[in-house]
Length: 323
Image 1: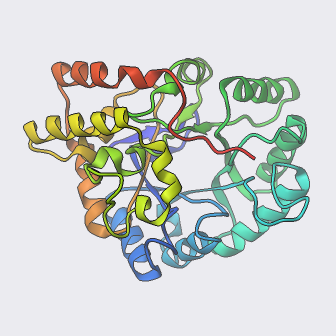
Image 2 (image 1 turned 120 degrees about the vertical axis):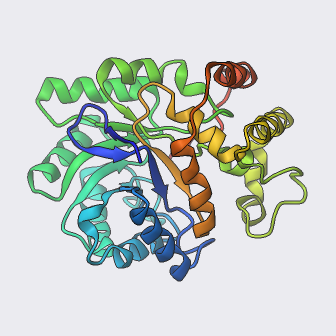
């Protein structure tokens, strides 16, 4: 496994990270624990979750699975998306963050979180309040590094500027949707991250399964898939992206690899990418994705993928989550 710096911090993370939003829902407790242990055994050290995944079950399962192995993981979670109906049950206010960090620590069965991320930009809370709260939590030893998710480039740059002006810890990383089927971060976010030393942690690197060869017909999704469980997901898959998925499958077949491994390997070549969040609901799926770490793409293949995916550098992103 290749290990990379998380932004310009001193911590090193595996080029492939484990995404856990299916744990406790599409993957039951036993399967989730097996996947976590297999990931650690395979050299993956970055595990990403959130306080909203599967209700809160993802965090609980991870806490159980890491018993005795906590030191092997760079553990990341998030807060900010709605956790209830109350007026303070969302966002990045001091009130909400301090409430949610305690719940996450308890569920994860740990005394610290390695990377604590704001799940989305909160237009109702001053960034100074959010950043001072996060800085206080670092000083208290409850978190080690901080990151953002679903921030626009201008929102991230504003946060970095405030941190620099006030002498606060700055965001080490950013999580955007980023894949062959969504190259919109390359317009503004990637140049910003390269300039400021912020690591990119792509989510939806396979466009929800579209780049894995899983979907050939939106109206007939595989049993247990995201598309079957969440019909609204179909709104993100249009004919152009379906065509891209077929082309990626064709190239992968020529290379005697899988579409998922090809797509992940391409993403590993992109500048500023620190680690890639890859979900799994079965150990076999994780094993297949791990093959991307050893796949080397030559110039001709990279150029072909560049040509096929160039239309997805513009237009609307595949996904973004806001409050």
